[in-house]
Image 1 (tube, each protein chain N blue to C red):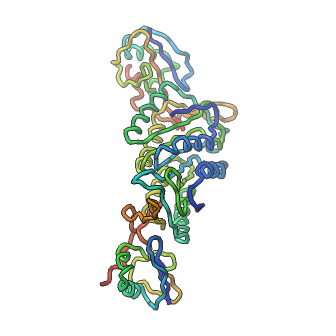
Image 2: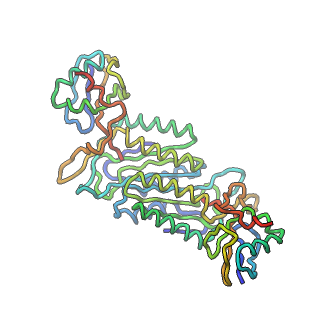
Image 3: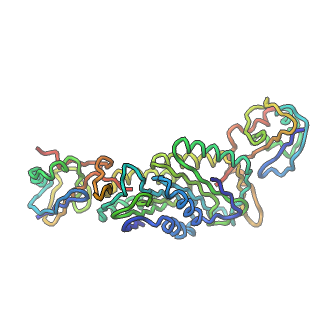
Length: 148
Length: 148
Length: 73
Length: 73
């Protein structure tokens, strides 16, 4: 399940609902990762653009991989502005055993950072500035620049 | 913070309260691990004994280690009976950055399994049976058996 | 005609052009100074699937998307 | 006198005995058939601190705890 929200996430609501939704499904481990906007570099907040069709595909590949391991992944992410100390991201794994959950959340969160089609902007002094230096080119980037 | 409860944990309450308690403390990552009793082997539930003085010490060592990495660990655990599909364990890390949280929760959960002074029993057919074959001797066990 | 979309922070409207493969798209875009710096760092998707070769064929109606460096979370 | 405590699943009441080190405790406990099998698999704490040697000295009032294999979570 992929959930996209305008602005900050209601973390208690989402964590609690996901827990209850899976409570009878015999998963021994529930491992959510919550990402919160830090007060750093003088920002007022962050802002996000999402290319939803490809994020949906990206997430479906992870769902399929989790399923092969007997697990379930869920994800929530913000669109638009999220202010300092608000949360913009939750990824969660449910799995029968702890080892799969621990390994999967780690791989999910890292690959998410490296390849999910989401762009981040700093909100600073009223401007919305692409966080280019903190962003990662998706694997295979640059092919259009190969020709002279 | 170490919280011990009689019987099952109120997971939504704990996850939400911990989140709110740390919301203004500028942690970028919140990573709770929730352990739930699986329906397997015909059990009605599990039951736990805790030796609280040593669990408190065990946990304080982890708090100190987390603090050195700029992080915070929290833990909740059940005493007594916890029925199938109820939860008995939550461990959580708050840290400024995701990498510390992911590494720390993994190490915490694994060392918890191997050395926290907690004993597990299967509740089955009205009996309370020590889960010996699923238990791990604490490192250094057996010294009293060395003499003839 | 294929349609070229510029995602995220690239401040550019979509354009349409005639092209039978990605190399032709690359040649056309490299003439546009505003977009040139992005070409070095963008990933490319055709109809929402990432591609890795300039030889990727294109047919009329295809959508080519440029994806700048990402940072979710 | 030192006090020996049997934690978790060991169905045995605490006992008190005279002992100046852990080896003496081990010798005494090895005579008790009900506890013998536990000695091979238990960790030992003195005043709630794990110890790793039979030479660990004991003084009057010390508490020795036997910790069987654990399984929290």
